[in-house]
Image (cartoon, rainbow, N blue to C red):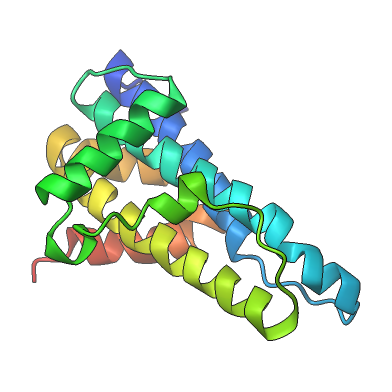
Length: 170
C-alpha cells in the first residue's frame, strides 16, 4: 500500500516522475549501428532535455506551492534566476538557452554524439540543483517516500544514485 502524501507532495512527486522519465529517455544510449538513426538522434534528444528541465523546474516551484504550467513563463523565470545567481555562479551564464531556444541543429556523427552528451550533462546538473532544493523543502522523509514509490528502473538507477548523493551528509 502506498503512503498517502499531502497534496503538495503528490504534485511534486508526479512532476519529478515526469522529469525523470524524460531524463531516462535522454540517457538511453542508442545501441544501433544505423548511422542515419544515430544522426537523427538529436531530434529526439532536444525535446527530452527540454521536458526533463521543464518538469524539474515545475517540481521545484510546486515544492513552494507555486503552480506554474506556462512553459514561456517558466523559461523566463529560469533565465532570470540563472542571471541572478540562484543556481550558483557556474550557471549564471544562462545554461538553459540551449534547452529552450536552440535551433534544430543539423549535425551528424561525432557532433551529434557530443551534443547529446552535452544535453545530458546539463540536464543532470540542473536536476541536482532542483532536487537538492526540493528535498530540503519537502523534508528528507517525504523525499525518500517519493523515491521509494518510483518504478525499479528509476529507483535503482540514476535517480537512486542521485538521491544518495543529494541526501549524503557530506
